[in-house]
Image (cartoon, rainbow, N blue to C red; front, top):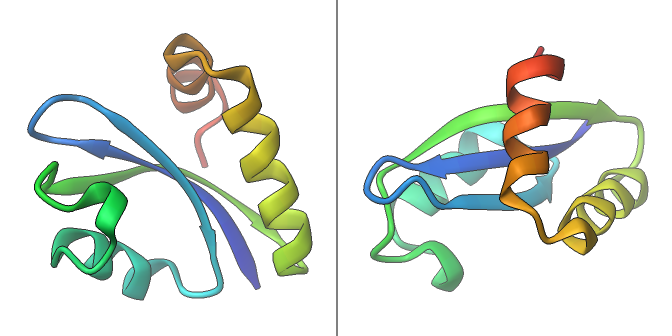
Length: 83
């Protein structure tokens, strides 16, 4: 199982979009500063995720959401489509 996910910074409400095969491990990496893009911006909370059969599908969704470049769309997903 693979995931597209959205994290929210508890520090500044910034959203981060990603994809992974292990959600718990990846969240831990973000919160421990392993990921350069999220370092010094946490702590992070998992606020949304979607499941996919392949990593390719999860990444496709990640790029689709990133292309929108609108924080309001991420907020809409979280508020209306959350698991």
